[in-house]
Image (cartoon, rainbow, N blue to C red):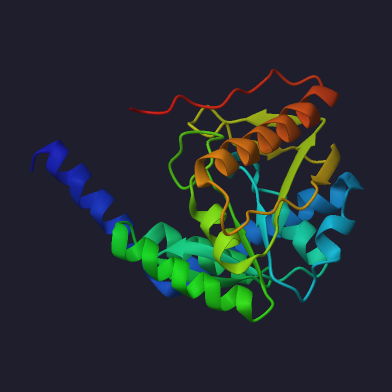
Length: 241
């Protein structure tokens, strides 16, 4: 049998394996345990946490850059912020949903395309109306890096809920060479978690103006935290035209 054919069969087999719920739960549990071990080994400083805690039990939208997600889940548990995340119906999305479920986060599920986005917006509006928090990365799931998509802004506009930008950085970091420059925290790091001031989008506000301002705030937040630890400056990715 041709080597390429064998490799293709092998890849298909492992893709199928990772669709099995029992395998996904096992992987999620392993990753969850590793993240807790790293988190508990770090010395963490919290800034602006009141911006989050005062909205506990109230509608709010917490936003973070896709590359800064690793330590946000244990921080959410630390402050009892068990909100809703947005996940795709794809295999990877299902795995991430199981992983976040271990930290107490529930899911809003959607798919790519116009209908999927509308479904997510409707579900999200209901969740916010019930007094819950939505936690999402406005540059996910595929970028461009540190560029705000409109989802969080529409959630804020239709609900009146504030957007709270959150981010973290650390002393011993490994930045992965991928589109979002994902930061992996090394054990025994000094870590700073920051929550910004609530950002509101009025019903009559221009979405594009709000998008640029939120993006400016979030980029500044990340770059200032990284500068404290002497990390190279990360710039937003190019927007495809």
